[in-house]
Length: 358
Image (cartoon, rainbow, N blue to C red; front, side, top):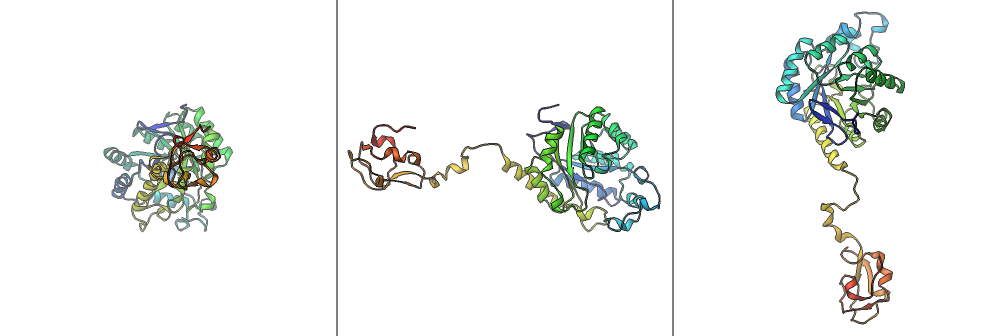
């Protein structure tokens, strides 16, 4: 494993020393239109996303067509109007026959594309399309058979944690690694739509890195862009955010997704955040050098003739910062002037007799 836990997606390095990898989640926001799905890929690229992500399932591979109470959506569920899980996923899924077209479109314009598989048949489809990486959606984190199958592809894995406790994450990580996964990213996630800010717990992001010895990031369901930018400041190396062309679309996920303008602004803000993070440095930067005049330093505050003894009232610590350091003030007092100066001249060793100890 690399020291920085780096992974590679289509030869693109994602690590602690690279720009944040930003994923536009298509989910169900294509509204059942292949043309709209293609347009989403193009707009995601224009907005600055590094990748688009699909979800590969059918209603029958993810749930049962059953009306028993367990399969009925509760009244406080944001998708309650669809009544059953099977009806919801029948509306939301991405047809499998679209996948090759969408993969080809993404490749043709130079944006990464991959998917979240929800069973082994989905992995088979994605392997046939040479998917470069796999995403494990939060609800699938306990599906040990799926995790094992994905890990056996030897591809990098991005794992979301939205409805998992620590023990679930640890089991998933162990399962992935024991089955051949060597390159892993774990995304902090809260499976609530939209997620309240107070439930984000972004401080978990750097702890994931420490606890599981891998890159960490965020799969975000909050409204707006504040949380993803904050996550990057805390060390997130991957950001995933739901993307929609038009929030007025009748899509099951539009209400917590970013449209093109918002996604573009998020990418721009993340890139600005990365610049601001910079590196550990206590040096005065190039732009700040011109403001040294705002620092304090020692200046003569009256005319003094050569041969005179410097008194306390002859020197002051004032702005600008081009004279001697104020820490030497007491050492200059009592020294003899080697030449005459006038008020406003800098205090320096070349106008006194004797030396100043550092």
